Image (tube, rainbow, N blue to C red; front, side, top):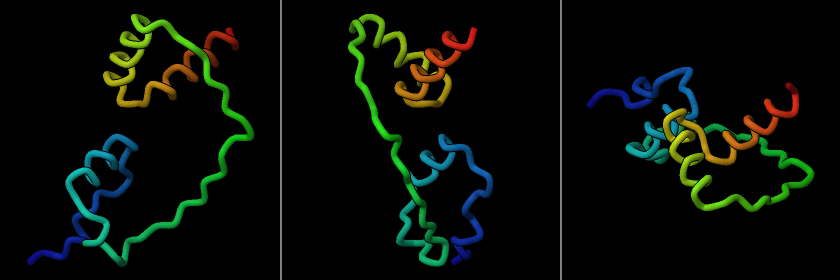
Amino acid sequence: MANKANSIPKNMSIKDAADFWDTHSVADYPSHMVQLKYVPEERTTFVAIANDLLSQVKEQAKKRGVSTETLVNLWVKEKLTT
């Protein structure tokens, strides 16, 4: 059997990593465990969005390979900086 540790792709994007781990088990790679330190932002606020707009945003986010939340935050940030 080939060494599975050598088959973990390096420098994966978040989408690539998600796709990879959807089909692999971290239990098969015990020597490659990574600890991440997650520091949440101080506060998150939820904003209502119309269902028809949400459907369009979800579609665009999927095309770009990012979460809906990430795309909305990027668009809002872009609008505020222009």
